[in-house]
Image 1 (spheres, rainbow, N blue to C red):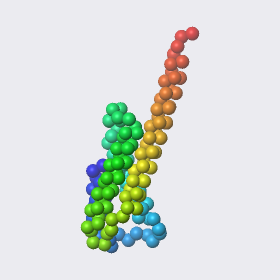
Image 2: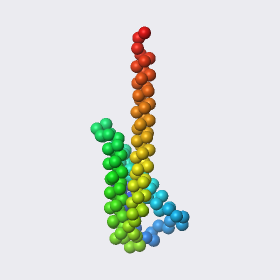
Image 3: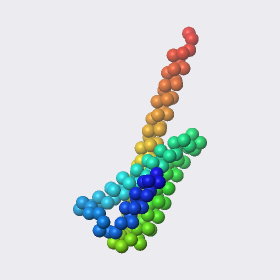
Image 4: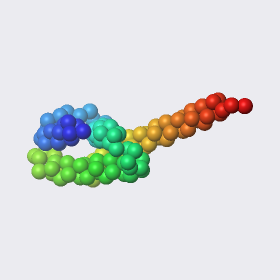
Length: 130
């Protein structure tokens, strides 16, 4: 997670002419979405040992709020870099990336729980004596 945060910080610290992006609308927002989705995924990975102690919604909300706060801080930092501007739209793309990853993670956890429930129900009926 710290490496991803460092990469985001490094890239946002570059001047506006550092990277040539393709000229199609929204490409930079897609990059924000991907970068903060990866940040959210790394945070969720780090939370795995603690997910039995907190609820899935609490973990998801924590991750999204963290990514939102890091995005706001990153945009603030970026406002001091020559050729760069702070953008609310970038923060929204950052947050959207985190939300998408958290929803995907929660969906996977719900499927796992459902499969384990079916597995245990199937085993309990198979092992009963007539």
